[in-house]
Amino acid sequence: MLNKDQLTHFISTALQEDIGDGDHSSLCCIAADSKGKAVLKIKQGCIVAGIEVAKAIFTWVEPDTIFHAYKTDGSLVHSGEIAFEVEASARVILQCERLVLNCMQRMSGIATLTHQYVQKLQSYSTKLLDTRKTTPNFRLLEKEAVRIGGGMNHRFGLFDMIMLKDNHIDYCGSIEKAIELAHQYVQQVKPGMKIEVETRTIEDVKRVMAIGKVDRIMLDNFTPAQITEALAVIQGKYETEASGGIHFDNLETYAATGVTYISSGAIIHQATSVDLSLKAVLS
Image (cartoon, rainbow, N blue to C red; front, side, top):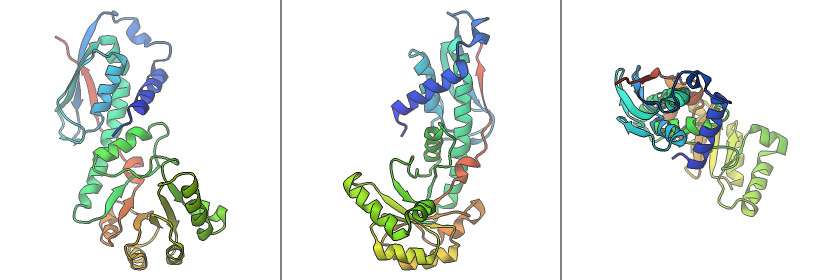
């Protein structure tokens, strides 16, 4: 679920970016005491996401905002439906409109694409993970959209899991040295933190198995046949993650290997924003 403090910080900085020293379009022609009502219209079928974020945006600016949600995050919605209705100061609605739409259109696109991937994996034990291939300063909501769409969040950032990737291993000197130092670091500095190591060949997998001390083995750019071979070496002793070269059309082929996770940056960076609109309701 969304971290309230992080969401508040995001809303504050995003509105400051957009409003600056004032929403002069509204200030010039909308009375300060003018009240307004608006509805969020669905213009394209999707898995809707960001309704709770929209509510948080409006109520952060005007705490006594009246917000009626007609849909919930994760719902399948159709063109012509109404997701929510909001009643607040007309100026507040106008100030928040673009931020709400930007968030919901992007989040709904990600949730919809994620849902399509997850549906393909229904017959398999493999779970879908996102990655850190996200939009700077928008990761909080992009990863929430993945969750809403039925996917799972990988580490949020560099701070909540150790992932020894190819460059870490190359800079460190060897895969064994990198794992040993990571294990010592966890014992001394971050007890309980998970360690994942990237492997590029079957030989790498065998070297990891010889030293152990990890929680998950990433099989990077392995073919399905190579993953099957690697899983035979790993024998279920560690979680496994397939990454690289995996897309919607070959997803099931990889899942059929029995790998624990498939990670995909595509569910975020290839998602297309959904068409939504916030329209004033006049009495």
